[in-house]
Length: 48
View (cartoon, rainbow, N blue to C red):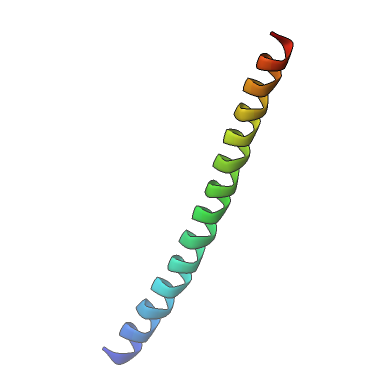
C-alpha cells in the first residue's frame, strides 16, 4: 500500500507539473494571439 501510494503520488506530481507547463504554454499562445489581433486592429485603424 505504501509503495503504491508513493508511486501514485509521484505520478500525480509529474502530471501536475506537466499540466501547469501546458497551461503556461496555452496562456502564452493566447496572449500572442490576442496581441496579434490587437496589432491587426491597430493596422486596420491606421489604414482607415
